[in-house]
Image: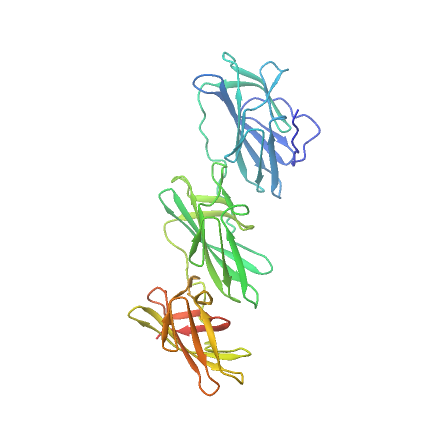
Length: 391
């Protein structure tokens, strides 16, 4: 017979017998049997269970078909035909992580002979319930996670994530966060919409994100972006949630943990990158750069640069659009529409002639929104400029 590794430590003593709507313990879990039911026809039956982590650490829980059985006569065990934990359905074994202090809903579905009205035994992990009546209708699934103390920020050695808001549009909820680089070096941040990113609903169901947005770029599964030193990017995720939900009990974003986040109609503060001192010159080994001016023109936002050769020989400096970006106050990156140098305007790459006796010039037309007053960060290849005014 198939055997599955149980990752949750089991108690050695059997739990006492109990009926539906009662609770028993299974390690650090409280197991509450809400009800067992029979579908309107046929042999389809199931049991609804709520698993509550009463400990102070997350616990990995496995429901297993070999162990989590029912019996109609107290002797012969019937294995489930489907196991559902947190909304995740599997035939033989299903696993989820339940955060500390929160509950997750489970359903175990069986084939039960017609005419049976009572289950002699229902086993879930180390919990054993006896003499459980089969209800004639599918049960309601009320909320099992009530709002608690909000946890709106989390950090590691390199980055801090701070909750901004969760905004609803019908059943789609977009949660926004500020990603702050805590170091003095530029940091590449990866944002995921699966694996280490998920939330737990009021009803105790797990939801993965529909997509993920970082610094204005949206992808279904994964996106990465550069976070300049001591700067912040906007990270957003969308989820599908019932319109009745007014909060998110638990959200894990790339391993950063948040709790009891309100779902509101008004956005939070988007001024993520505060003004600072102007840095309009930057010097490298072979050349130096100066940002002369940024201003709105008919086609967009244009920034003009002066580049100076620091070597003893003239050469042509190639500038690619992939390495030219500006960061806005609200934490979004914007690229270029065109690059102009040496009398040529190109959309993707341009060469800047750098003589030894006179500087070269570069103009960049950015694909940026209107209304910007300051550019917190602008990079042209390896050149970095900060807090550039838009005049």
